[in-house]
Image (cartoon, rainbow, N blue to C red; front, side, top):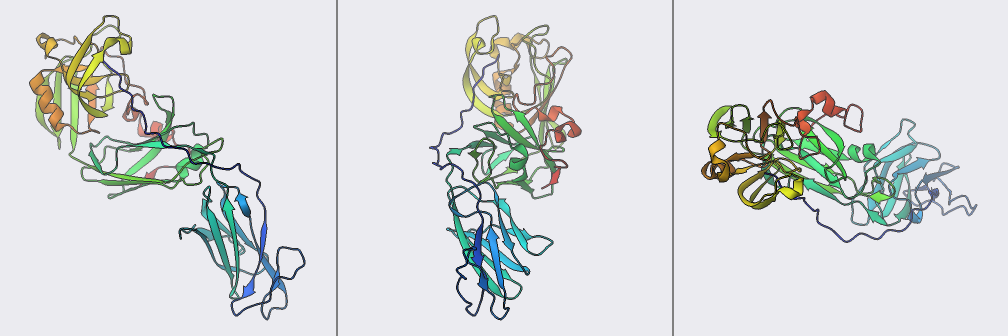
Length: 408
């Protein structure tokens, strides 16, 4: 039996933002630390003599004024000499890290300037002279909110991917993906992959090359503040983390009508089940699914998934495997078929007692590896967490960045 329950991300009030304006160039005087002369008054951006140097030097900053364009790196250029140090600091004391180019005269921030933020720029050259400048970026009219799975500080199974769903389409996928940093306690190898979520929204998941190791601690730092995800939809910073729990795998053999729960490679539970009815729309999916949620007692209505024969039941111990409505759950009305016949509307049914025990043992993120001849085939990648049905090479190709495989 099948039922769809969709997750609706929390809605936040949007942050107001002014329109983006064109980039301007700011010239600021380099003055000796001991106290150099003031601006020259020549109308060329306040160039000043370096103390004892007898000639003028100046810096330029690509962002200036009170409505500077957000979403771009800060670039500081020294007209002559070598840059020794550059700091770009916001009003809260946060700093934009950056690097000086090979010419020694140009410094570029690693991250972009965030919307609605005031920055102070200070540059020092190799002769000890300094210059200061400042600018404020325009606020963001449009904020692309997102939802993260799994939840912060949760414990999940070995197949759980990191998943980010955006409220609005992400056109600048590479720019967004570049700012997503996954760190793990054991240098797990993995990759991001983009897709259209089952809801129709933009989604990106980070999947390990193989199942997680039990005990792995995972952190995601989404350094997205100021990143334009496309069409002026800016994103904010997010941080989350989770821990990988017990090493459990659920294996379902629809041809033999058995469900086996493995823990650390050993069978700890063997349950007779009944899967989807062969030969039509009621067949089950096969392949690798991931337990998305433990939903308890829910109403299942065939009309929500377009099945011909109407049913409407309250179902206990419901364990969601796909967005399209495939569950493992208690199905006492189907008891004559457990262990011998597939006779459900697509779900994996079992007795109340077995469902209760399984429900109390499995973790969100546990893999369900389902095999059987007469099935609908593997679920789509976006129908729940279907990425484990792709080879590692296929999954890597869904990244927006070349060579994006990372060891967290």
